[in-house]
Image (tube, rainbow, N blue to C red; front, side, top):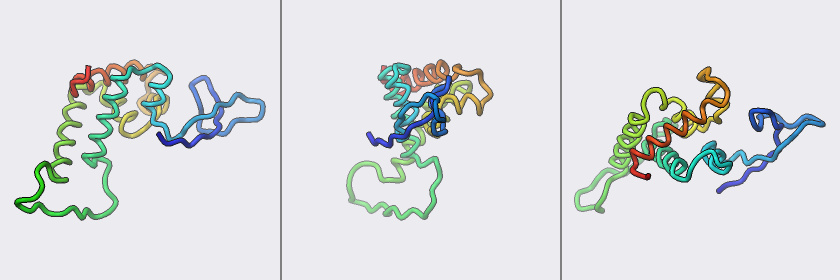
Length: 155
């Protein structure tokens, strides 16, 4: 796992994005760590929930749903080539898995699931963006990850 440690101000909601004020409480955080691994390392997510979230993020990235910046130069399929899926076919399969997992999570749960797992938002940021009460996102995220784990047949 990558490490990029910085010192942040510690607030009642957790580490803030600001540097600590003099005399204030501070904490060292790894900003290269995903919100999912942060929650898991503090006992808020089970191993299966973490693995489900990581599989969903892997499908998100493999499906290239975040948009590309340059032209694709994938080779065209040639008959008699290697067995297995070609890059475009792997992308389509990943998109189908991602869509199936998000659909099973449901409309009430998929918003926080996408924000935290795919967009990498912290739970407090996602809660604010969706105008949810503080600390309500953790329960909703856990329910969503349970459903994603069910989709991927992890539990």
